Image 1 (tube, rainbow, N blue to C red):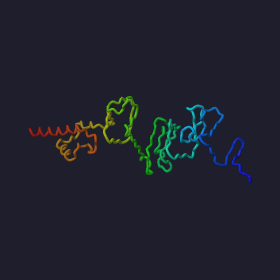
Image 2: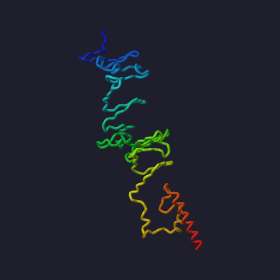
Image 3: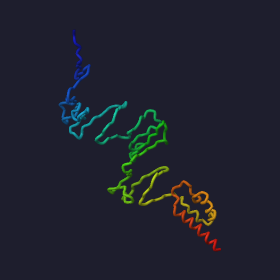
Image 4: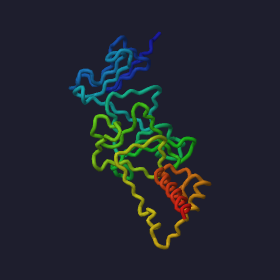
Amino acid sequence: MNEINPWAINGNSISYGGNVQITGNNVLEFGAGLVKEQSAGKIGYGTFDTGALCIVGAGTTGSNRRIRFFNEGGATFDGQIEVNSNVWIKGQYALQFGPRVGLPDGNAASIKLGTSGTDEYLNIFGGTGNGKAYPARKVQIFTEGGGLIVGAIKIQDPWTPFSADCCAGTLLAVNGNTRIVGNLGAKDVCVNTNGTWCDYVFDKNYDLMKLKDVENFIAKNKHLPGVPAMLKLQMKKIEELTLYIIELEKKINYKK
């Protein structure tokens, strides 16, 4: 009875029609005989890290070893991935979180540098969830360990109240409404209202509400006229001064 030879040789190629076992800590080496770093191009079980399948990239030194994957159809990793160095994403490609197939928003849950061929901004697009598209994207940042630093901070402890020496030109720009649940501490506050200050009250034709009407409004609504009841910036001292003025008018009218 003739045995079937699993080996096949075709020119410079050798194929084997069966399983290949490499025993112990021995390695499968690619590029043997080339000028390369000693461990480059080797695959071994527990050879370079106990309990791990080790794949060492190609290179001439330990600092330039590289592995390149050609996987235009995608790649799937089951389990955690630990990276002990920088991760480079070239060009306008994005780092995508969550399944992209079926999402109505192509940018959802992704991070990429620049848009429309520019590299001016690092863009972080929130996840949509539940099949929703823009503008339903949301981003949550959980920083229970000490806060979120935006911009260039010079001091050792940027969270010491009112002691931050921030570099000139460092800005946090928020396009849209902003809600802060908690206290907001600031060394200086610059407010730009785009010309919406209420200086029109000084016009001689302005219809100033009578103090008695102001008093009745406050008694009924518990806030000043023209200021929404849920607005947090009600300026406590100004409201107190209004009450002082009302009380003063009462005393003046009583004396009359």
